[in-house]
Image (tube, rainbow, N blue to C red):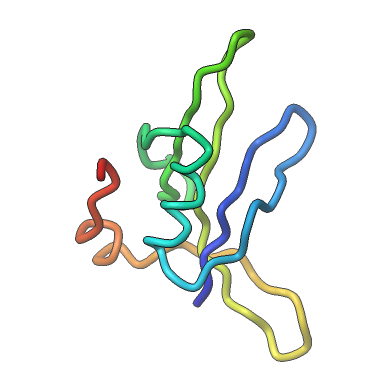
Length: 89
């Protein structure tokens, strides 16, 4: 499984980077100045936020199961992995 580091924009979601590990995706998002906020209600995805002058930017990490024919399917991250990872580092 891969991990998508995503940035939420007004009208769409932008892929920042497709990562090999949860730690790498976390580092990509925190390098943009975002801090872990909570887990999403649907899918349990980690949600991050970053303050800006006119509001906030939101980011999240989603699991991605790669397909043999190209592309990927979004999937939840294993609950054990989420519990074991320190998002406040």
